[in-house]
Length: 116
Image (tube, rainbow, N blue to C red; front, side, top):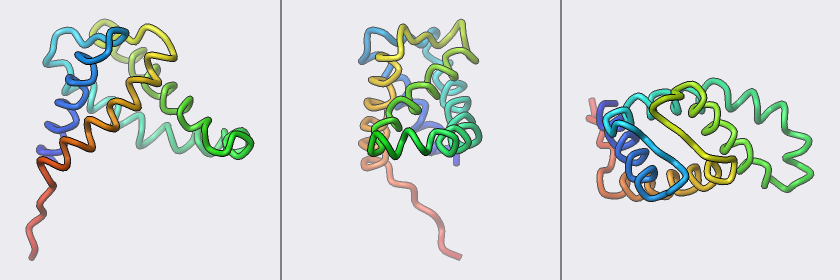
């Protein structure tokens, strides 16, 4: 669990440093941003995806990118002074790049569970 939090925090920090429209200040707030983003994605995102199901079906799933961007914008609103996203487009870019960076970091640091 701690390893997953460190990887998520590192992914948030790398993504924020990569994109011009996203800032994390100071850098150690990436841990809190990763926690808030994880909470938003696990609690609020399923409800929004369910409510947006008709439009998601009409757009053949492309509206999911907008939902992901809105979750990033919500996280930016919750952690206002330390995590800023300039626009919806930057939030969409952040969610895409964050997914790729997180995937790459999980390749290098796999989650090893002990067998009992």
